[in-house]
Image (cartoon, rainbow, N blue to C red; front, side, top):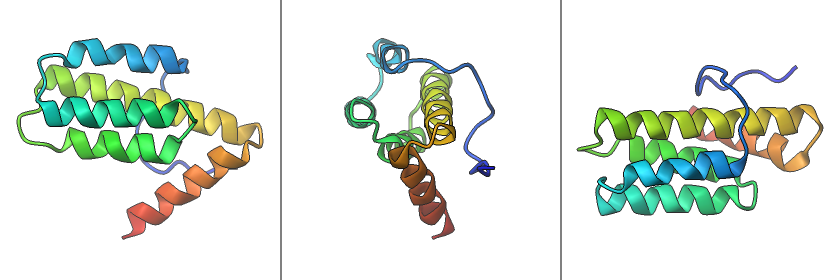
Length: 108
């Protein structure tokens, strides 16, 4: 069984389009937040789960992130995490590697 890495609570699994659609809610966010969002969504286009999650965590911590923007970022992190675990449970090597990468990153 795969251990949860403590990222987020389980929510419904969505597709990459449903994750990236949250970006419209970030139009009023700072350029740095929007740039990070775009980087996370680009990573998801190649199933770069770990990169996407780490990028979202990074922008979540930026000063000036509103509660509404934080919710969009948190929801996207949840969906990506869910997708990653679902893929890992189907023996996707890229998803399994992403889980290990996240565990290693959080040990630092």
